Amino acid sequence: MSAQGYPRFRFPLLFLITVLIGPVSAPARITKSRPSASSAIKAPGATPSIWTPFYSLVIGSGFEYQRDQDQTEYGFPILIEYNFSEQLKLTIEPKFTRIVGRDAGSRSVSGFGDLETTVDYEFLRERRYRPALSLEGAIRWPTAEDSDLGEPGRDYTFGLVASKDLVLVDIDLNVLYTFIGDHEQEDTVDISLAAEWHVNGYVGVIAEVANVTRLGTLGSGSTGGRHETEATIGLSWQANKFFKFEQGVVFKEGGIWEAVFAWEWNFGGD
Image (tube, rainbow, N blue to C red; front, side, top):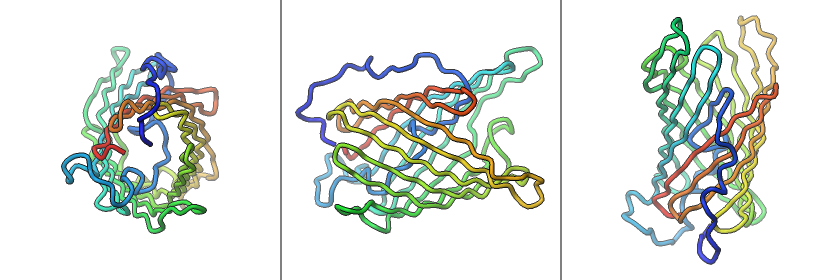
């Protein structure tokens, strides 16, 4: 959405929470839901504002913090997205983590964790009365520099992404199945629904509801069918047509909450 024609809002408005607690596992955006493959590209025929090879590139990062009785963990997820066309998008998400032991018996470690790569193919374009539909495939690669920074085995994720632009509100629905590479863990089904309401050209309100169902695996002895639900509320700030901030709070079961922060730079100037 264009940022022209609206008054500027000051940056401090975006800071909902200044202290982060509880377990955090957020990507380099504050929502789990991904938009459709063409969401980062201007309308067909639009003139790129900079050198064409970088026109389809989006980069970003986030900050994570968690603390318990034994250790404090800092996470810095990184986002790299590139559209090879309006329908085909590649996402690469490395993550740097530092774990600091809080007593003499706890070890400290830092380094890159597992790498996640995702491909989205938009097979049905958005029209006035229907959403854009994309197929998504993702792999989590066990590339962690230390066993405490990742999980064993590869995870394979497949699913459907639906996105609809309702002028003032953008809606994204993701339905994903993940085959867990660690045989001691359970396969999952992730369903998430996110919406961003554009208050004006600079500020948006973000909301999301996400549910993860752990199905269990053969021979695991698990009954399966366990559900985990969380809700996110936050704000976005479009500083200019390239630079966007996101910040919010995630509410989880058991009274756990967390704060999340992320930024991204869209070279195409969406």
